Amino acid sequence: MNAVIHVDAKHPGAAINKNIYGQFSEHLGRCIYGGLFVGKDSPIPNVNGMRTDVVDALRKLQVPVLRWPGGCFADEYHWRDGIGPQEGRRRMVNTNWGGVVEDNSFGTHEFMELCRQIGCEPYVNANVGSGTVREMAEWVEYLNSDGDSTIARERRANGHDEPFHVKYWGVGNESWGCGGNMRPEHYADLYRQYQVYCRQYGPDRLFRIACGPNGGDTQWTETLMRRAGDMLDALSMHYYTVPGAWEDKGGATVFDMDRYLLTLKNAAGIERVLEAHLAVMDRFDPAHRVGLIIDEWGTWYDVEPGTNPGFLYQQNTMRDAMVAALTLNIFNAHADRLVMANIAQMVNVLQAMVLTDGDRMLLTPTYHVFDLYRPHQNALSLETAVFADRLANGVKQISASASVRDGAVTVTLANLDAENAAEVLLDVNAAEIFTGGRILAGEVHAHNTFEAPETVKPVSVDALKRTERGTVIALPACSVAALTFRA
Image 1 (tube, rainbow, N blue to C red):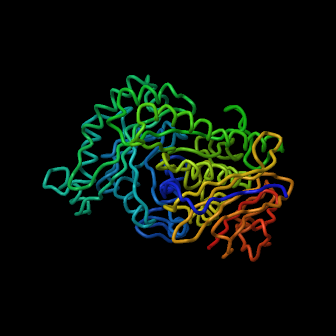
Image 2 (cartoon, one colour):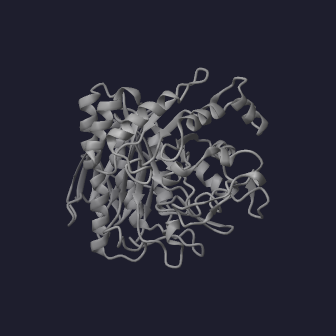
Image 3 (cartoon, rainbow, N blue to C red):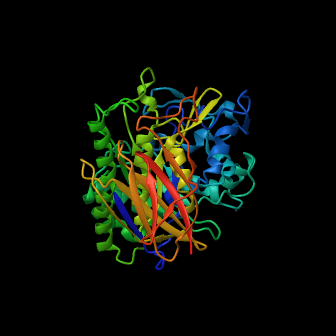
């Protein structure tokens, strides 16, 4: 037996916020244009300009929340440039990402339409770096007011009579870097000012999200909590898995085992960083009123050869599936304080769910991991103890998490070993009847292409071996499984 997993199904813990399975869409490369949005006149099938094939895939994934318009782009985005008749919208150069022309044909109303079609909540990241307090205040009013003000009338004139009721508002993005190169003290004071003017209209309560730290910068978190902790609902954190130096991140599909093990080690490091920030937050907020959001996370490699370096387009292999499974298991284990996470990014950028090429589309291994983990959304977390050998990088060979909802226990587990299968004993007390499962497996470099879009996809787990000690599953090398049990 390579590993033993004990799941305490008798004592459910905190609910796993469905928003932990959120997504991120930025005006970056082909995420929006060509990925999500093609325009009403496109020959690619669409509804109100949104790609039908991509929207259908994302709806099946039950995406709970979508962050927009950035990212670094958010602090150069002025929302008025993206409303009104499309032919009259202001054109700009996207200086952050590729130097291409942004024609603002995808703006506020288009984003809200995308969220409506997907069935998710919008998370709007407002401009602090180059915007004004008034600009942000009027965007909140434009989206949420049902009054008879000039701003609300403007929304109605642009085709939407009822307010959009946007709950989640980010006050700036990466203000320590591309969002203004600010010191934490300066940003904390700006946050205090800006959040005052995020007015509430009607009964809807806004959820105000402050820009939190870059990776392990606990000083930023401490300063923000000390100066503004009583005025925010959550703070955000960014953590990317980069298997090497920024100037040599390595390829998405061409890598050796040393680079693979480094990727897993760096991915597992998110737990240490997350817990360090939570410890700081606990000192200032022992009641856990303030939530933590990781609204950018995922793998970051060198771009695919021949593509615009500013578009951050990369392929997606079973290595990425391992990172996704490992990370989501860590997130599930911190459900008491983690209230949202948004993988970067949804389509055609970094660790994407979907890749497109003209009218063609494929689902990535990461998409399939999110699909396997869907039952965890809003379920109650279960304490999960994993006893397993460790890989050469010190990371346990087996990663797992579990939850329960309506009497059904879901256990998700991954064999992170790229070369060796594992026999795993599952002790799921009070819920030992196996009712079904699926498994995603493949050689670590395996990925889907537009010529072979189903090379990597889940298959059913038909039967497991039942023993006196529990249930035994044989996990192939480099695999992710989701299993369901009942009492």
